[in-house]
Length: 518
Image (tube, rainbow, N blue to C red):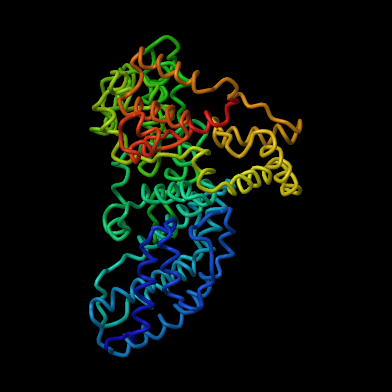
């Protein structure tokens, strides 16, 4: 029988799945449901700031109430000489890890808050000693050899990273729609990969080797995504000094490449030697040199970079070596690079504006941020939630009344199908405009954006060779469908399968066409 009863083993398996599961996928809530059975309190299907504060997750408290006494019983059985199979010991270890994380969860959160308020997260961690005592009590039982020998300082560092990752993603990427939920899950995967067990064993010290490319329309939060990844990297814990070795709050360095000339980009990134160019009056270290092993350099608007600089960055990605401008000495880059663009790099590759070898060094890990229109098509009710989130920043005490005023104005004047071409950034300005002037005038007016105008745009794009074959098909399918109003009729006109028509519809263009006056 082993150390578990049948029901205890079932419960422990569910907890074990939760330990290593991406918390932002629907399966995470399913494991809670399976573990708690009839005691499970119905909850939104995915973790979302707008679906309720984390403290309202009653199921977490119920799980801990069950895990604590069970872990104690199992520990006593093992200490008393009970025989346990390898699988049972793995389940026991997972159960204990979850319990220890939950015990320190709020203390870790406090450490995060202090760091973000300007108090370094590298101060002495008071609760480490208690964690170490608990770790030794449950996972270093005399005469019991655990299948996986965890180092307590390493596990403590992983716990801190998990807490930071959850906090960064949960508070930065808001919305209850499935496109937003998938984005949160994708960011978590960029930090820990799809296999948390492998990450804890070996990958935690290798993730800087993999560049992350964040793509998506302007105003969709690409820098928020990059910051969430950059500030949630693994930071070792020094058990002797009882401190984390780095301060995560100062570990993220953003460089907006589109705002700089090629010479300034080189100087900002690589640094320069005195006299290397006019104005170089002293030696200067660039961000690549200042970036420590646990730091991240964020290259925003990477699609705007001159090909000559692409070559230099390619060398950094390939060899992690660079030189200051005016020097021949090789210097080592030790951190992680995250890049972002709103450009269609596939089109730029085809046109020769972006180096193929550079692109394939960037794309080992790609995240795409959804447009606001995609989010609202999936969940129209999210408009109020997002407006409320912005309203709380603008006027905390009257956020609800402002949110109601703004959403009412939007529905009456823009309509539910407004495509929000400026995405979340446009929504923020809409809220502020209505707060101040009780009205909002979109910069991207859809007036005149009829099928004829879009057809002219398509013809111009074809003449200039700006479209890939897939973009051409998407644009034309969308135009025909908008004109005929039926997938079947569009399929007959185009002489292709209706499913192909449906898969090629450009939702943002379609929304603009529907919103245009007829």
